[in-house]
Length: 447
Image (cartoon, rainbow, N blue to C red; front, top):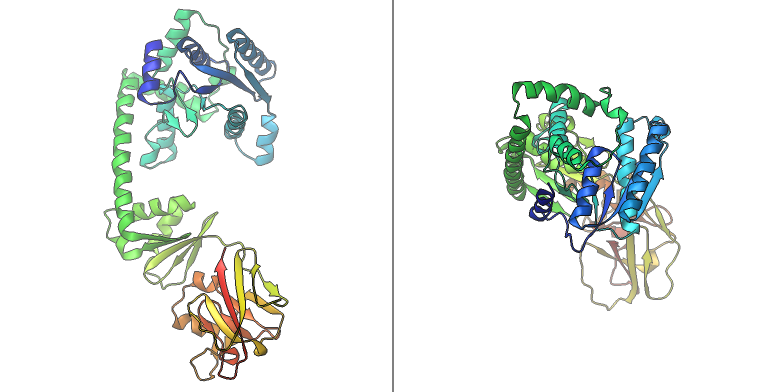
């Protein structure tokens, strides 16, 4: 098994035996002991970490003592921690297994970083991968739920994933290595244990070569997933445009794909939209523009020809006040924006762009206010011969979508008169004229 272990590490480029430092997650059970013994015999540079979840009283404490002694016998660094897992699970109203997993990996990563380990090694084996696949199928999954457990993901590696449970048991028994039995592993109230003790044996009655069969199945599923991901990227290149944090998805383009509903889900899942929400959005694609859908982190707008996705804004109610300008030029730093300002004589030449506006300084009444628009706002757009217009009508005329409307700033004077619909149009009442003596130039930009 040692030679297979070394070959697997090399073939999958898990780590460099001669150079990398590995933090082994060791529970004391047969799998993690096999991992530790193989690392020792292969000459790996490693330390041992143990989590005591305090769920089995003296048995848990006995596991911790056993693993600590193993580290002493190996003469390697030892790290340990105690968690009141039951209390934390109760407080968060989550399953003990989920909380234990979160606590474990978070702590292991802290130890890895603090002590300059290259990777964290855990003792998942091939049967664990089979169980994961079966669990995913049972509760529902897509193609990505069928690839089993990966040998390497980020800083986490699984050097004995090639081995079956039978391989590990035979290895430990043949070498007469000591290990600890976790009594909770027999409790079928836990989902994984139920699959392990009830489902897998029933399947093995049907196919005695189940482990070998599933190994081949997982390889095929991973190959299929690679093709699937490739196709998704090709379609994204055709129908998705990203500008900064804004994602624009062409609705008609999605409809033309072989499986439009699935494609839309793949586009939206990185933004925390669930499959049911993606399905609902697709079903309502013929509705008039304007509907907004939300996830934990993002908002989606059904616009005219696109679904538009943006991060959920946190500053829609922000307002800024500018008391005065000192000197002839400068910059005001706001939370997300900056305003460059300058005062010129009326013989200056100016370069006009959407980010800039120019005003007759003597018409400006301080303090100035920068705020979002609200219903009823009006202004007198330059170029309309002094006619007033509602901001809402102006937005409609220039075809802003709801997200763009929400994000637009208004610059107002001390009387709350609108000087500038920022980056769109200034107000006629404050424009530069032949009689202007001093010109105020403003430029606003996102930081």
